Image (tube, rainbow, N blue to C red; front, side, top):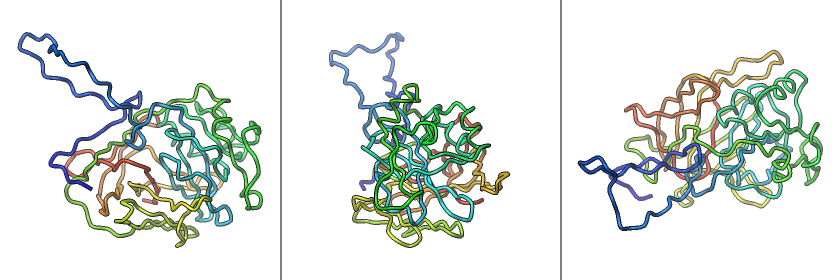
Length: 319
């Protein structure tokens, strides 16, 4: 990647578009006149920093059991979140907005912490297979547009080579048709720049182990991205594509057990996070004051940590 003398940060606004820099004002205080026609700024995704128009946000709970792999269209997610569930296993949460594939999955059940976690996207649509009674009630009473297979079966189907329950898939467009008021992509605190900041620790690989599931990332200079693996095996899609992202966040959070023994990822608050980009690891501080707030990642010098433009992977690690 090219190294720039000045890092220009690109932030997604509530409309999903980077804000324009204000032009200098003349001494009279009147706006400067120009004979040149103004050029429209290209809309960018606040989730990836890449060109994209504001679009509905769809969150999908994705199975990550070994019998559920390979995943379908996980490579199309703007953000892939890895979460710890009971038994030391992992589950995924895909955030889709820039691109909606024809189908994706396999889809599995939601957890209680997803309600608070997803409020940073305002009121997204949530695709999931179902949930235990107490969690289902919590989700239904939340501002999220809950669209479970149990209550909205039409967008879902059984398919692929996996056996139930690892073979439930969803048609995103059909599901979003049932949630026309779902929030559109908006600023969640991520900042992007073409050049990495100074410093950082050269890093070839990083992994997070939940006990019964391990998620790893290996830096590929050739592909200019971090290649993902699950339980030591390369993570791939049903189409054969290797999964991975330009930026990987390992966010340390508290994980106290809920009343069912499921780790409850506490994503509101403040803590440490390691951000991987361009073959280096940067130590940062994450902060999210309220459930409705976005999450910021700040370098030790007080500057925002700029992510590389492209798919982002976020892995929760127990603090």
